[in-house]
Amino acid sequence: MHKLGVEEWLISAVMSMYTGAKTVVRTVYGNSKGFEVKLGMHQGSGLSPLLFVIVMEAISREFKVAVPLELLYADHLAVIAETEDELNERKDNVESKGMRVNINKTKVENVRR
Image 1 (cartoon, helix red, strand yellow):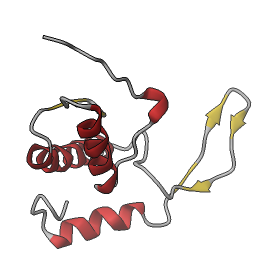
Image 2: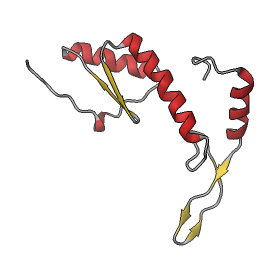
Image 3: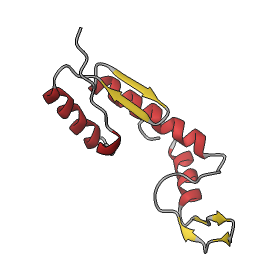
């Protein structure tokens, strides 16, 4: 939010909504005991889609500078590189920005012209 120029009072308001927040898991056997949400966004919150869009916009702006060709779709990022070394360098760059690359979901395609 800072990177997109959102005013500090609004950032503080959003942070106060998340500080100490608890949630439960609803199952067919009833609700779980409440537990604190320490990571991620609150599922079901009306604010979550907006926060997701804000985060993806900040990430998109960051990668438009770092990666010449990028494709964003929902919460996926496709990085295009010409060599394996360049791809590894870009993966490291992605991780240095705070994103986690799930190697199990990573796919490398070798496309020749």
